[in-house]
Amino acid sequence: MKIACFITVLLFAATGPISAAANQPQPRTTVACVPPYRGKGYARSYNFKCKLRTGTYPNNTPCLPVTGGGRPLDQAGLCQHNRCKPFYKLHPLLKVCVFPRSLHRCPDKENTKKIVLDHCHYYCKQTDKEWYFGHYKNEGNSACHLEKPDTPYEYGECCRGQCVKRGQCSAK
Image (cartoon, rainbow, N blue to C red):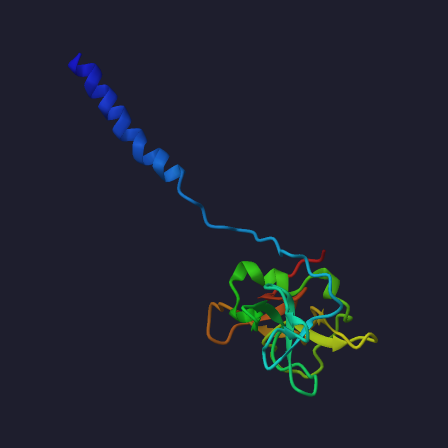
């Protein structure tokens, strides 16, 4: 009887923490861009404010900060709490929501400025007078600043809107 109780206690003690660890919430690895953006072009955000004449843009609406003259002021982002938060300040899982396929209407182009790019996308105005984005092509002039370089002067290359290590851009 004493051995049976000891084995039961030992079994309970051994499985308790294991099952408790299995029930812990796991970190998210994906995010749904809710609500899906159906607007024409980026929501223009004057002075980083996500305001309309009739109210404010909903949270997580793709936005582009622009000057009073209508020119891009910073990188596109998402409206959060009535402000346009640029994508580089967003949680990594939300960054995909800034560049929905519906807003990729600018042709991919070469970096003709011969500078190392901070970001691998650019913005253009279409005939509907709305702002959209395009990518810099993966060509010899698309050097970019890696988010986490292995060495201080290591540069990456643009690949479908992302800055990746040289030689890691595969054709899709």
